[in-house]
Length: 52
Ligand SMILES: [Zn+2]
Image 1: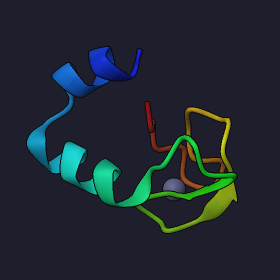
Image 2 (image 1 turned 90 degrees about the vertical axis):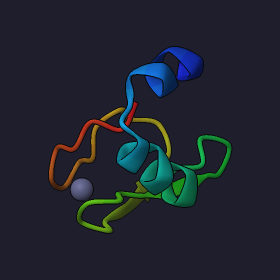
Image 3 (image 1 turned 135 degrees about the vertical axis):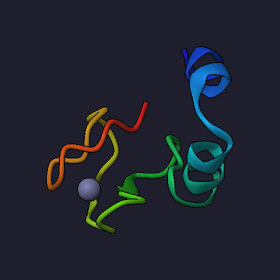
Image 4 (image 1 turned 90 degrees about the horizontal axis):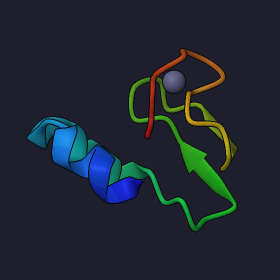
């Protein structure tokens, strides 16, 4: 799943995700609005950005 998303993501999105999204961490931070939330949802609960 992650690889599939990775293929389709733009380089910009990849860089942002690499820096910010860690699916193994208990919490993650939205690269768009910097809202921090428990890892799990595929969309930011604050701004709705699709994360993967
Ligand atoms: Zn957000």
